[in-house]
Image (cartoon, rainbow, N blue to C red; front, top):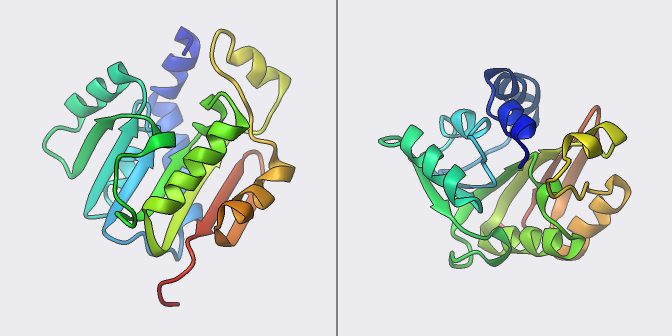
Length: 190
């Protein structure tokens, strides 16, 4: 991640944007359950908000340095920070009530790996569990902002069928300045 990008994503302004403008509207009326997996927390802008909504939160970060920094910052809380690959989760089937990923899908280098991450999310969700997330919309400005970074924006028009093909149901996709989504694993009650 380039220095400007890292600085912005770790800023209090970015955390406030995620926590005030995105998360409350996205999770309104949702039952996140007791145990959540957050994929790609980076500096933890969403993590700080999400951890108050569940009993236990596992934050999986591919960047070992970012995982270590977040682990130190959240030591003694209900958050367990793990360094690992979300496209090859080491958790058993049906381990989590909810999975979250915020502004990180565009850092996954290929559509195939994005799909694998989404399929792994489905696998570790309990029946009726929910995947929530948001990601930036493709733009020239964001392409330049991600100079020297992995930048593979999600194609909005293909995202709904991708989620359906992977096996999610009851999908809500909202495009309004960015893309946000809610998708459920079949089963459960309700």
